Each structure stands twice: as C-alpha cells, then as structure tokens.
Image (cartoon, rainbow, N blue to C red; front, side, top):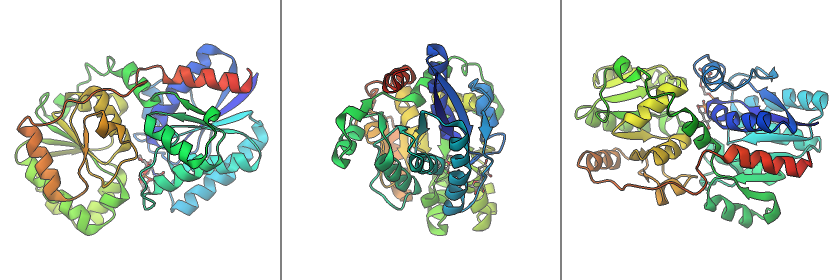
Length: 366
Ligand code: UD1
C-alpha cells in the first residue's frame, strides 16, 4: 500500500489532520503515518486535542519545541528529513501555515517526495506575518493544492499553479467542528467561567503583531477595558500573550479588569461551546474567523488584513485592525444589534476530508 505522511505541529493543525486521517482509515487504500513535529508540546496545546478528537497517537514526535523562527524551522527540517529517509513515503501532506508546515515541505521536496498542501492559496499579502511566508513558500513548492475558498483558487492561478493540481475541497477545520458540535453541547465550561449564554464576549489573541508590541498591546487592553465594563469577556490566554502582558508590566492593569475572566488554553470542546454560546467573538485567530462564520456568531477580527476574505464577504467577520476606537465601535454595534447575519461558504459541509482523500488516492493510483 502507498504510504502517506501526515504532518501536524501546532494547535490548529490537529483539528485539520483529524478528518483526513479518519477518512484515510475509513477508505483503507493508503497507509497513513502521522508525524507530530512537537512545535506545540504543552498538554493543553497538544495532547488534549488528540484525546478529544480521537486522533491516533503520532507514529513519531520530533520534539522540536519552541525557538526563534529559524531555529524552529531548521530543527523541524533536520528531524523530518530523517523520517522521510527512513519511511520513504509516496506523499507528504501538510496542513495550514505554521512553521512546521513550511519546514516539512522543504525537507520532503529536497528528497523529491511530492507534497500536498491542505488549505493552500490563502494570502494576507502581509509579509510581516510569519504565516504568510510559510504559505508562500509551501505553495511555491508543493504538487497538490487543496483549497477552502474561491479566493485561494484565484491566488494559486495567479501564482502559476497548474489548474489540474488545484482542488476545491472545502474546509477540514469545519469537518471537525460539525463532527464535535453535539459532543460539546453539555460541556460545563460556561458555568465554570461564571457566564450565561449570549451574555459574554469570547476573546482570543496571540498574534505577534498584537502582543509583541507594547503600544499595540496597551491599546488593545484599553479596548477590552471598555468592553468588560458592559459585558463579561472570557479569555483563554495563549502562553505567548500571558508572557508579553507580564513582560510589558501590564499585569496589574490587566488583573484590575474584573470583567475579564481569564483562563489557561482550553480544550477543543470547551472552546467550541464558548464560541457557540457567545454574543460575539473578538479575535486575531484565522481559525476562529472560520468557525464563527459557520456558527453564525459575529466576529470582530483584530487584524489589518485577513487571508480568509470569504469570512468577511460571506461570513460574520469584520476586519477592524488593532485600533482601540474601531474595536470599541464594532463591539457597540453588536451590542446594539447592528451586525450582518452572514452565510456559509461553499463546501464547508463536513466532508472536506473525504474529498481530499479521494483525490490523494487517485493521485497515488492507490
Ligand atoms: C503558532 C503559529 C500560528 C498559530 C498558533 C496557534 C507559526 C509561525 N505560528 O504560533 O500560526 O496560529 O501557533 O497557537 O508557526 N508555547 C508554550 N507551549 C506550547 C507552545 C508554545 O508555552 O506548547 C509558548 C512558547 O513561549 C513559545 C510561544 O508560545 O515561544 C510561541 O509558540 P510558537 O509555536 O513559536 O508560535 P505561536 O505563537 O504558538
């Protein structure tokens, strides 16, 4: 049987490999081999997703851990090269846009192993965003492209990708959401955080552009202060964000905002339940822009751009940047009931994983 290495490394990757590996197991025509690079390693950032989503234990964990971009990318490349040499896969599948995605693509291609990119073609056109570099490099090298929205297809065509290699698959992240929405229904996280359905804002924030600059982070805290006086904010904080709030000396100011209910990173079902029951989401995450769109939850995106414009054109997201006045204005509009309704993009239907595996099997003539 043909062997396919599936790569995951950081939190959003786990939700994306889950439906692919399940579809491979169901079809039984290729042998999946799961590689965890170890980019994310804390129990709450990694293992809890494997347990809840029933993802098989990785065949190998490269254990690369944290580091600068070059360090992390280089470590993944060196370790993944060894795996490819040992396992001799017929195809490598990478997902998303994290450092592990790009690193494994480069290592595999240098060994002449074909690579498929799931979530290909997304572009923010902002090269200061580390993920944009990862997306551009990955798409420049890979052989098969699976896309989530029509803009991605257009971007790949502009880049010169052969049309026969580009497949509109839909969204694997949404496969996982739809598969888990019922399982998360009775999750007690709202009681645990002391909030009521539709009476809180759901905040996530971890992008370097928002948390690594003292002035920007200070401004954002000002906006959150305004909002938390009107509505509780539930904030599962990423380790990077917690670290930067402390480093910039914002700890006491942050702790004085008693309407912000902060907690450690949550598991997938807790996140899903909090998202679904929120009045609105305030985020800089790519995944949350997509998940709120499918759940019909208003989403204020605290970024200057998005690689997922379909969540704005079709969905419930508005990109407002990190200007506190614009964030406050958007929150006030939601509180006043003035927000668009939004719809669901094509193919975000729970079956993207199956479509991807069918194309892979055909490609490998499995
Ligand atoms: C990475 C991805 C980003 C994704 C995010 C989801 C890149 C360039 N960025 O960003 O696209 O949206 O994951 O979370 O790949 N840390 C821990 N425990 C962990 C992992 C990280 O404490 O398990 C801390 C470390 O201090 C680390 C920092 O978080 O230095 C940043 O982790 P890193 O993987 O480098 O980037 P993220 O910000 O998580």
